[in-house]
Amino acid sequence: MIRIFQPFTLPENSHVILDENAFNHLVRVLRVKIGETIILFDGSNQITPATITGITKKNVSVKTATTTVENRESPLHIHLGQVMSRGEKMEFTIQKSVELGVNSITPLLSERCGVKLADDRIDKKIQQWQKIAISACEQCGRNVIPTIHPAVRLDEWCKNLPDGLKLTLHPKAQYGVNGLPLPTRPIYLLIGPEGGLSDSEISMTHDYQFTDILLGPRILRTETAALTALTALQVRFGDLG
Image 1 (cartoon, rainbow, N blue to C red):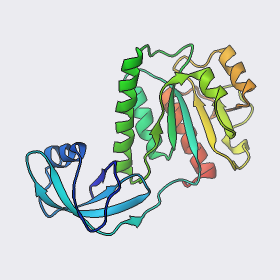
Image 2: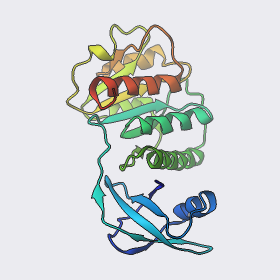
Image 3: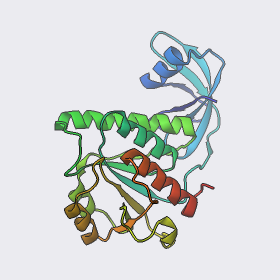
């Protein structure tokens, strides 16, 4: 079943014209026909079946049915702080993190961050990454859209985090995910850049009560580390496995 996100409250049993993004995807990419049924969701953890009733050169209209709650959210609340990586690696991390149930992502700037962008280009990247998060939800069945926050410096992110279980991956940590207590608060997961966090940055995270954890004997690439850590947390405490 085709799933489409709409950034507005969906009225039940009503005729609705979908937005431009939905039109482009449904008509120009999927080439849907009048009479086909799709699933709409607005980020409120609900779904609304709809039947396509009209297609023009500029829009597509549907008739909605009854809205129902369909909860596919993990019991864990995970905020991923990911130091930005180059090219498609960051897009891959965001897409797969959403599929693995992350609730929000903050792109970070660190000493060894390989991404150097002007503020206006970073803002465009944030918008692009939010669209990737929406597409991932459409694909994987989630009905709540994770937030891609504005990019900030690593120290600012650590300093301003609320209370929670704060974790940093470190190859010399003494224990892994299985050694963690059952989290009763949000989890803040920090993933460093391709060159790793500097010694001073690791020391700084300790000042803000981050706990070092180990994923195994091998050194993982930044995009692999994020997904492996999220999977381990979901298997240990969440809804995977």
